[in-house]
Length: 575
DNA sequence: GCCGTTTTCGGCCCGACTGTTTTCAGTCG
Image 1 (tube, rainbow, N blue to C red):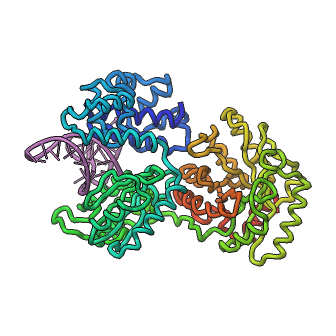
Image 2 (tube, rainbow, N blue to C red; image 1 turned 60 degrees about the vertical axis):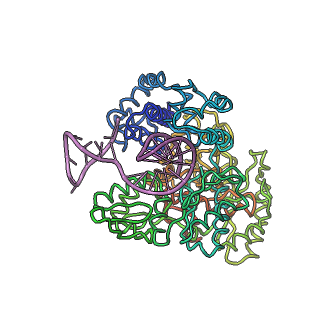
Image 3 (tube, chains in turn orange, purple; image 1 turned 135 degrees about the horizontal axis):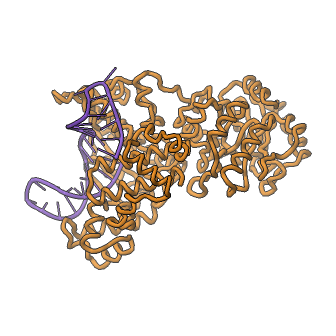
């Protein structure tokens, strides 16, 4: 039973308690505990065995006991009892838009419905509309919600949602009654996947904004349309919400709609203790009801006694305490990046010539770039032999002579085989400027085997970077099981850098792990792993993920000037 | 069920929209 399993059961308990009609605070307690566990980098089994469950914020005596039983026996009596009262199928019903715990319970009590299929059947027979509080429209909305659910099942990648959101913002911006506009929600926080797009605008003519928004060409249907708030579904099945406020409310509203929910709850709690109330319209004195601020986000945070917090940090993971203490991290920015040190050329499975890549990198303002083509053992990717690399180095040398102000480095992405060995012996490896080692096969090995493989690559004195360390592919493949603590420790000790692979469906290491590794002294390389010039732009998503992991420029080696980078690589044995 | 520089009890964020009502409950974010 791992962290995800435990978090999942706690979430389900929360949902079942909600259906049973228990206190919403109890429900929230279970949800918060699940959220906390999902953010852990350490195996919850270890934390349990060290007797430290209750040191996790959000986990107290009661939930710690539940977790202990789960980990000891693999079962939980409390959970099983709940399942008897609340059929597990009912939990699916809550994920339907406009169906919550109350309606799920109503359908179960009155019609015996326990699955989405049964619900759909009841809708087709018009059985729902006669229930108390229901009617034909509510029934139809649930039918649409079920269709929607089947389409929206998976969250979409940030890289798909982001350009769409920017496009909508641009279209709305063209109207002069839109005074200010911004994305909000998880997209503004740059989460790796997005459930829906939130957009916030300031206007004195909100109904005009609503009309334009609901009539955008990309809109396929309208879920709700009000005076200040509308929701639509776009062609790719993604929901977009627009909220409009008055210009003087924009800052408070942007803060509010950016979230996260947990961040806002914590913030309001602080406001309350100061005798203030924060809502989407501003900051108010509780006693007098007088508005004391809210035109800008900065003003909201300052009134609560803290510095402005960057959206990528707003997950209630200590950023509020840091802001109160004035010790927020000075997070890395895209403009700090001086080079991309994991790029593939047409020598292996990339599309572009080295010269083309170098020219594009120079245009981006980079000072260096590493061509890291696959090595021979990875045959499927056109891996290079030692002789191929020697010929490639001649081409690299030529490009270096032709281009000013940019250095092309001799790189390689070597494969870590099932025994932890990498392509090539030490004698040849040391001729590279930079060596990235990655796992490309044997994902189904045990935690011990996989950890051992990566550790032996880390202890190889010529391996500088571990590529995409956990191997996950968002929506397709879970991370392989690893003892990350061991890996972080070894990386920090040996001066081996861990990659933050910027490919939008990888973003590997992920945010929580970056932060954990940083605290253990690890340094990182934010790389794109680009296989074409166009993919060099993925650096944007990598940097955003780095920000979410609290990384500062000095934690990221490809923010360093060329000479300093080379010195660090030489320290490990290359260059 | 959790939590504490108002602490071991009594709080726990707050408002918009919808569809049903005729003043509000449920849902959502």
